[in-house]
Image (cartoon, rainbow, N blue to C red; front, top):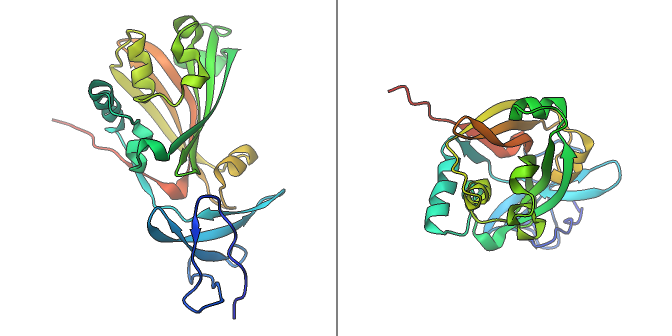
Length: 245
């Protein structure tokens, strides 16, 4: 019979098994090396897996899959117009503003060749590089590296990391500069995560990530590039409508 204790998770209520005094793994939820337990997450009972990284052991809820659709940027346009506190991420996660947290790191960097090509500028052009980890109810769900042309945002509130998270996301930030987004191009691929991603997003062994390269357009000009939006593949479903009419 199983006797292992439930691992503590910050901000999550723990639930013992159906038999008092015992915490039993759920059947069919995890490989043997990753025991799972019942926890209450956001008002629902979920499984939680014990995950051992090279330097630490931690627990990660088995979270519901979220849909990532082509209409998500329209939501930010609606949020800009309405003044709603939200972003495409909070809409994807179906969470309120108080449940959203954004870890961020800003720095000024010269564009490498690949990023310069995405912007259609010369290599070495100065960029504002913004590294984000997006959290829903305290759980890290995705990370990204988003770049803006430095001469477009220097000495503006958009370049201030203390202003994050910004209601309306990139759409609202660019709107504050008088820039109206007219289109977004995304390239999606999958790969195995690197160690930084595994640790930051608490990804169990063997789980790949979905990566998205994004170009945000205002007319013919690329005004923002995300060189890597990284989401664990077991937490996302790509759902796109392609209108051929």
